[in-house]
Amino acid sequence: MYHLPEALMYWLRKRLLSQNFLTNRQLIKKLIRGSSIGKNDLVLEIGAGSGVITNELLQVAGQVVAIELDPKLYAKLRSRFVTNPRLQLVQSDFLGCPLPRKPYKVFSNIPFSITADVIRKLLVPLNPPLDCYLVMQSQAAEKFTINSTANSMAAVLYYPWWKFEVVHKFSPLDFYPRPSVDSVLLHICPRPTPLVSENPSLYRDFVVHSFTTDKKAKFLPVNQWLYQFNHLSPKKIKLVQSSFAKYLKSQQLLSKIHRTRTDSNWRQFKKSSLTFQ
Image 1 (spheres, rainbow, N blue to C red):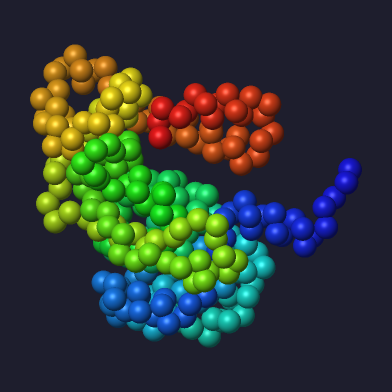
Image 2: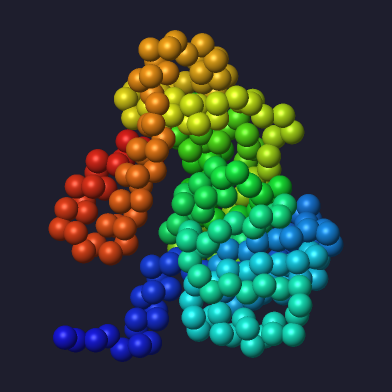
């Protein structure tokens, strides 16, 4: 069996994980100090990379939990921050890690390839963050923001509980290597009063079922989503139940096939899941 050189494998792995490191230290300092993060906060960083953001977070936050999957980058981070007692380094895939049990905030330059998975993991659980700042592809950020013409399923799913706002647009020169796409800092903060306070799981079932059965669902104004949800008939409730769970299962299957390409039918699975986007 032919084995690729280690250096080439390392490069391919970085491409797969969409790792573009922020290198503009002054800009990072400005953005973090302009956020809600303070000395009493526990901050979660997803994909610590070279530690530039980690270092600035330690200047502002009370405690930082930094997760890094790459073993070489993790080793460098350990060497760099070994004496800092306020930093907990974790070598792991964030999608498989438990979230903090204490109240926490998030500031991260996440791998662009898992944006939707990261946001879903952060916003759906029992202990979501108090505040969240994510560096991501501009096109991806648009999928989570509400507009007056058409909305993605993701935007409608999170709308009752979260506000999404682009607070900064980056230059490609702020990164290394330079990304071929536009990047932004997306601020995600919880609504003071949720627009849906009861049966959040039923609301998610309703939205997923609507998007997967009605091609015009994306054109429905957000106030109509809330109105229709509050007036669901018993028959409709029974029809939509478990739709969100089925959606998650399909996405997990798609992710595995899309990342490995080992299944000869991966394109078929990809095509069948497009209605969930």
